[in-house]
Length: 164
Image (cartoon, rainbow, N blue to C red; front, side, top):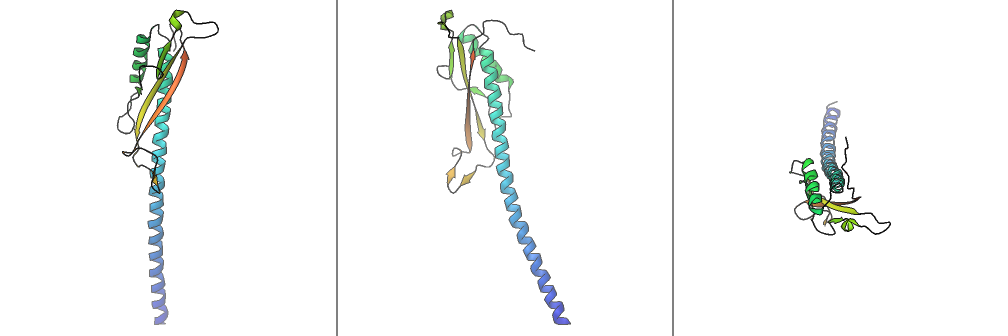
């Protein structure tokens, strides 16, 4: 009976070793998937934020009467959408000149069948916590950041908007 008892002890010890290996491999997979999920969630947040900021800035700029007022209105809208600044930077106007910021009211006399418009482009910089690298291919810049840009065009409205 003693040989059977030793055999069972060895088999039991081998099962414990296999279980610890399964736990180690499973933990590595879960950590990797969690890092990828964090990156995707952060990129989705930044994309949605930049989309809302650009839309609001273009809408605000379209309700002004001059390019200077449009730039001030768009900049004021950017300040309303604040971020923590750690992973997602504050939204900014990419430029105040054409084509990134185009205020075209045709001098108050637009041609027939053409509406005056304003185009606004905003950007945010995202620093991902776990940059993804597959077989040497990088999906981000060297420092783990990604710049997202968004452009909206709105018709210029020369009336006061009383939205709620």
